[in-house]
Amino acid sequence: MRKLSSFFVIALCLALIWLLRPAPIPGTGFDEPPAQATDAPGVVVFDLVDNASDAEIEAFEARYGIDVEYSSDVSQDEALVRATVPDARAVLQAVAGDPLVEVAEPEVRFEATGFPNDPMWDKQWNMRLIDAPAGWRAGSGRGVKVAVLDTGVSVVEDLPEARVVGGKSFIRGAKTPADDHGHGTHVAGTIAQATNNAAGVAGVAPEVTIVPYKVLNGMGFGSSDGIAAAVDEAVDQGAQVINLSLGGGHSAVLHKAVNEAVARGVVVVAAAGNTGRRGVGCPGHAEDVIGVSAVGPDDTRAFYSTYGPGVEIAAPGGDTRQADGGVLQDTIDGKGGHAYRAFQGTSMATPHVAGAAAVLIGMGLDAEAATTALYATAVDRGDPGFDEVYGHGRLDLGAAVRWVGTRHNGLLFGLGGLMGLALSLLAGLRLRSSLGVGAVAAVTAGGLFFLPWLGLPPNALLELLSRDLISWPGFILGAEWTHFPLWLSALVPTFLAFLLGPSRLLGGVAAGVCVGMAAGLCFGAAAGTLEPWWFGDLMGRAWLAVNGVGALMSALGVVGMQKMRQDGML
Ligand SMILES: [Ca+2]
Ligand SMILES: [Ca+2]
Ligand SMILES: [Ca+2]
Image (tube, rainbow, N blue to C red; front, side):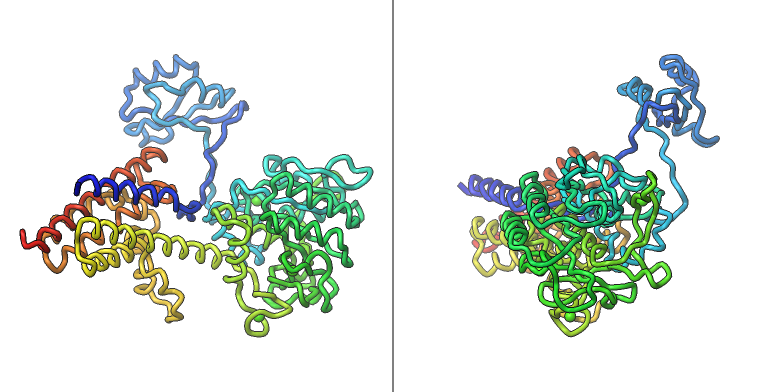
């Protein structure tokens, strides 16, 4: 019976972890897709089986009709070689499965620049102000559809074709949603500019898909019914965020369209306007539409920004009167080419918010939760609290991402606590002991995640205590140690179980740590948030799951010992 219920607990906890797993939480690095080979001539790099003999390498060359050389004069032991080939993709396909080849890839160019390597990054004060790099660490809005309703969007050097998909023109005479003005492409660039591609500038959410809807003509004008129709269409096509860097007099038709979009779970973001006065235009004034006012490089309201009821948040719109004070993105130059242009306006502020919302949605939040996170973490500017000029405050994507991370720890805290309590109660421990095990498990799994909210002066110890035990090596030794496989295993829990399990005082603590670690490991396996070294994704998850169950077994052992002690059998 005891055995049966123990297995039942394990199954229940694992099912809970799987069901409650949230969206992936940011990893520690910028997750670049692997380099793609083209069928053009190029250099292919092969990591051959270590200490491959000269004869083996010569046979390899003969097999594929290529001529390899060592990558450097010390590469012989690692058998790292390179070859210039006429068709890189064909060669890579041909060598796939060759027992001599450990890894093969097209040569990847690296530069000795910082991150990101976009050469004009230093002019992007706006991206630094909102902490856009935090968004890149959080997945860059991968897989999220952002509809840009504007003058159209054209593919330019720093906005690759793969990022701009589908769309439609609602302007008579314009067959496609291509841009014939420059405004829409610039706006799309702020959201999705190719980032860390060693060209041009960066964007807030470079992995999103931009769906362009041309609702403004080449002069920058459009009509309320065309815009309303495009809003409906964008929602029908599955857009999760709609960017409206436009505004005008009140339109009941447009008002209804945006309200319906929000009701259907879409984040709708609109510019407050550029009148410099009080009185937000339509559709930004709509209650459920995120109205965006603009700040300049000094982080105060830009001189042109409209304010008043309807503004929910502020974001960088720039001030081109100052040197490098505008918002710099890639757009069409009107002569068939492209140019990096600095614009200003609430139109430029709006896509920062749309991109930030897309990053949060990409982390697994729904529209409402993403909006809440943006509001809750905006940096308060102007009058204390909510005000008509900055709304909830100025956008801070870094704070929003961290806020979501805290929620992740909060969830693990609850899960770990529940598992510890259930396990102990089902094993027959008294309520008081069970609560103790649950409490230790909760803190182990989620850390004292609420500490940052207490308003204490920041210090490293508080930060450490606010983290889950699994992330401690990453915090103490450096981010890469977060994924050290021997820590992400049942090793420490099992050791603790043996060492402290028999102790009357510390047995419960050991059981709690085991359960907390088990919760963290199983959660990592389910959500894919932990990536142990040496393993691929699937093997890594299997490692975490097996070790999570192992840690749980250790916990069961300790709890069993405690029960025997309780019954006077030990
Ligand atoms: Ca770029
Ligand atoms: Ca509003
Ligand atoms: Ca304020």
